[in-house]
Length: 331
Image (tube, rainbow, N blue to C red):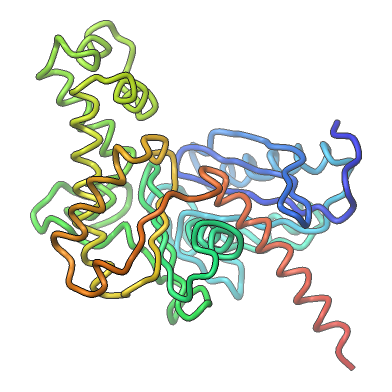
């Protein structure tokens, strides 16, 4: 139990391709409890149950002092109806997530794309604060995207915009992940999943490297392991992160040409590697992009790190409650 919990907390939920983070968050973005789960449910009912369980844990931890819930989902969203339309990683196609959870929890529930929400908090209080035009890429199991144009989140005509991880960077590249029908998407080339795939392949070719030894002794190649080995100086691990960064830079060069943003925020688990990924990404973006956009855009790590999505979901919930209160107060 958390002492001295302020009234009016909201619950923010960041549902990723492999894990879920829920938090009880107050009006000053202070987190009073965190609930972590695996999001790998076998079907829709199991995934909804996992989300519900994490939310209930967070509510109980703050003595039931929760007024609303926001949920970020790695899918295209019909925000008006609270429906997850299509997800490449989870069994949430055509699922009325907001209605299902609201009925179970007896609380207002608001949903949006997870990367949209990560950018929402970064734009309002983080790395993109003060930027009129901003982009965000979240590098995890996949790659999510968010767009702010003239200080407003851009969702597109049906709420399906900003799937920036599915721009094609290699026409005849490998098949994309999950349910994506495309090939050579940025996601399959530069996500956390791509990092593990490339590191495993290089480990086999460099058996004397720390990366190679980890593979041979059965440790298992993971993104955090590659990052740790790179920070410790293993050249094979550094080579993999440089490759991922340069592939990311190819995608960024297209994005700066299209959007001419003030800032591009990079978030997600891969960003534990920091400048080992960001520096090569910037170099390739500048080499391939067009002036002046390539020289103007700043590429920054997310201020809130892996909690951007959860905190953005909390902002969504609070904004939703405020909007409802404002409408009900009108004569």
